[in-house]
Length: 414
Image (cartoon, rainbow, N blue to C red; front, side, top):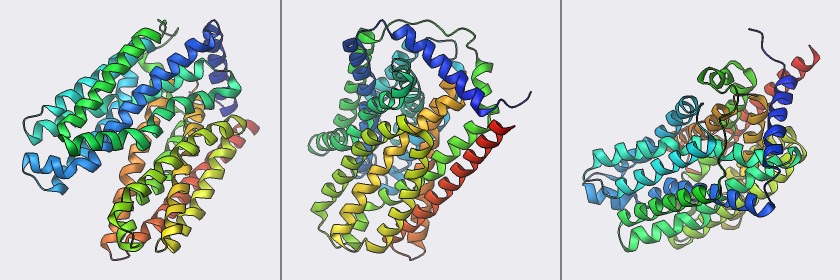
């Protein structure tokens, strides 16, 4: 079967979006806002659950009698669940309505967190974290598609950005809140809180998400068709590598703050808050820029990240520059709505699988950045060297992006 031209793929994706937008046109602005609120609430819960565990690892280790590094396996288990779950669920649920799928995914997430809070031993806790990670990517993918379907073509990225605000606000408010509960009551209370947010999201989706129909022609094989498109693979590769730099720095930012910038331990929470603020600013600004130029936003932010990561590596010893760079690195999240929207374009009629797989790619970036950052630290180059690792990964992502654009232009000219 011949590879479809990117222009044809994008036209097909936009035609489908126009059709779904027309179907949603009867919804009043308040109804759309409530749907986006419900979708964002799920993102808030998922983001809170994903990041809160990082501050509660010592407590988990003490409860189960394992070392902190061993307790870290639960983070790996969750990330593995995201990577595996996103494409598999998107394929198997091809014949489900989006409303039903969202309700099912958030129900699994809520139950998984509640059961995690009651896990009797470390093995069962690890398995439950893996199961809880399974709906993560598929939820964000389907939520992005629902939000985009209710917006005009020229405002799709902003709609996706509003849903992603749930995730970015979680880094600023949800994670500290869950960490507070965990440290003052029990880490189990933190997971109960996250499970409660999941239940609330199910209720909001049940109330506000309209009943829909299975898309005509939807099937397992149509979704698998996404992986026959070169541009889908290239866009996923951009996310897998280009965002690894952010995680290379963020994974070790606490030690960089105290051991390189020589700032007090009490300032670590402030530095993390700056990162969260940057993510929120980047999400809002980036989604608007993406509606103006998808490729310009992706390429521009990747180039910006290369320069910024080098600057971080050179100036991390200075407290002011460290704080400034951490904020700007968070702003690098601006490319996320653009990448998500680009996947919708290049995936044509297999949008669910492509959109869900984007979050698998981000978790690969998370693992890759943390692994390579840890490697250079272990080699004796110091915590500031994570900035140079980030620059290399961002440069690699930029290279993949340029290849993608070149392929796109060649397909249009053919």
